[in-house]
Image 1 (cartoon, rainbow, N blue to C red):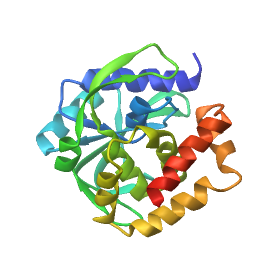
Image 2: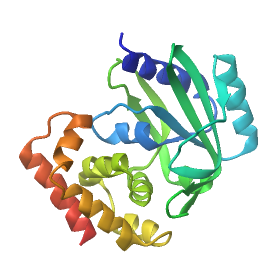
Image 3: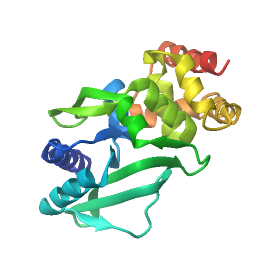
Image 4: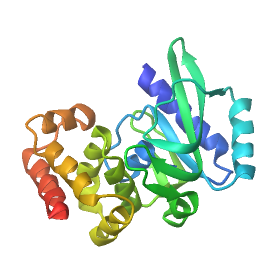
Length: 227
């Protein structure tokens, strides 16, 4: 088993261990529920209150995780903790716990933990490299796209591109974003990225081969959302 498989296996075992507690999965692992699974370096979860946070922290320490406080680079700021577990020398699995409120670093757009929970439901998360599945509370697709549109990092843009055809309500997505930040700025960044000559290669580097017709279908859907 290679390092990426070991990391995914560890994350799944960790999520299984803490699944009795109340949390919602966001970020890359949530995206894997709706699109072709991709590797994600860490797993982002959201909790609503300090009581549940304490229970999760205690369980993570019990299974070998250590709180990490130096050089944490997240797309969000606010109240969060990172727990890491060494799998092999120099190779770790990490769980990022966000609580009370999630605030985007670039735009200062905020999502409350209550909003995350009200826009989430229990779904099946499947592994990419391992035969494993878990039933967990996962952020709903439209809410996930809204969060990723606000962050608009390269990884978020790739995910939006792959998720867009499954979006339930584009108007709601645009409303959630426009209420929190300058949506035109986000759309400009999104459009510039997906129309660049390098974008398809970047996308395939993460998701594998993407047929030209499928690529154009997704691209047109994103451009239609932008308007």
